[in-house]
Image 1 (tube, one colour):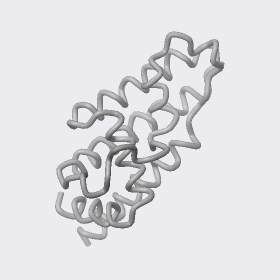
Image 2 (cartoon, helix red, strand yellow; image 1 turned 120 degrees about the vertical axis):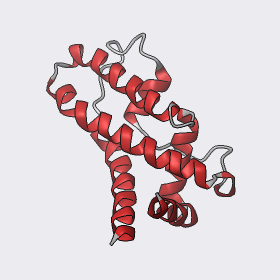
Image 3 (cartoon, helix red, strand yellow; image 1 turned 180 degrees about the vertical axis):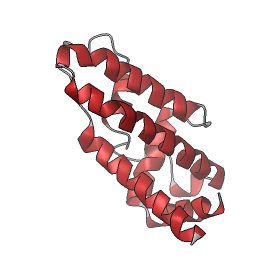
Image 4 (cartoon, rainbow, N blue to C red; image 1 turned 120 degrees about the horizontal axis):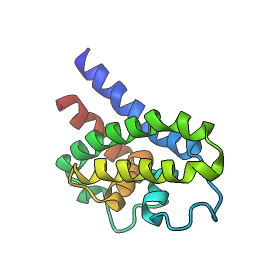
Length: 142
């Protein structure tokens, strides 16, 4: 049963990452002026469009464990703030989006990953069966 719960947790994290893409609130470009672009990119899309220089074989079990912990924290930030942001007029949402993105970034970096590494690992989790299987194995051992 413990393995099932960890696999379910991993599946839910992968699902949350996918939903995060479509659930993001987009503010008008004028309203987002001055907002850190890397943080905004993270808020709008937790999954990179490619794996960049990161190859599946370069991702260690420690990276995957850090990714799992960070993904749960990032998902919590999104869940906690998304409804509030959606209810705000777009001219007032920009500071909330920036704060959420900053909190997401902090949760990733405190888990010894850069935002770029996190997004690339998320890409690999979505697109590489081997990485996804390893992620499940790491989750089962946590």
